Length: 236
Image 1 (cartoon, rainbow, N blue to C red):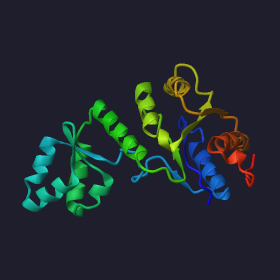
Image 2: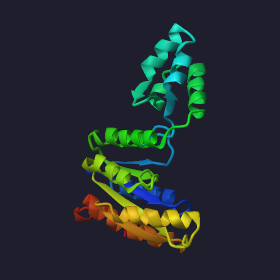
Image 3: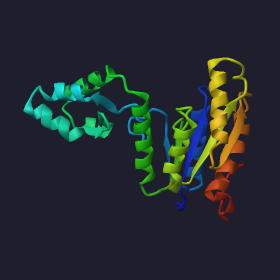
Image 4: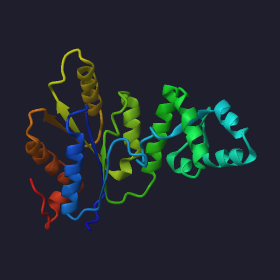
């Protein structure tokens, strides 16, 4: 395997082909003998996805802990304090007895997580990943632009700079006008334009998927240094 490290983030609005593009990048890199890990959106063990993190208010945690000494010990071993709330990450949830795990998730589903807490959890997850040693190429779908807050997005990018991030944004320009998707697309493009990392905006929506791949692969290859390898077998 080639010693190549990087983080390729495939972004775009729903229906633009993010999964197809990310899978194509991962397959192509594997064919190039590059160690690659593809993460789809929403995977429970995704290093920066916090959708599966259970967030409990202190009162909720204490209510559960009051059930028994064993429950209290299990919860205190699994929960981490995060500001004014307690979080139980998926890997910690897996250590809990199943009935307690279900009650934790049910309690979390009834808890409204403030926006600032959600942003803090996301930033913390990206910081944790950023501190890991870069190994191989990671290909992520829809991980970066989940929030339109450009300050937060820049913070996330800064957290993973050691992993050499690059953004591929799939832009369906049919999403225009005053529609909700059209407005979010315009916000996405503003955020992407303000990032100081290599970025490629690929017009899509014309049904020519092969052309999109032909644009993405050379861009990713150049960023990762594959274009300069004498033994490169890349397909343009």
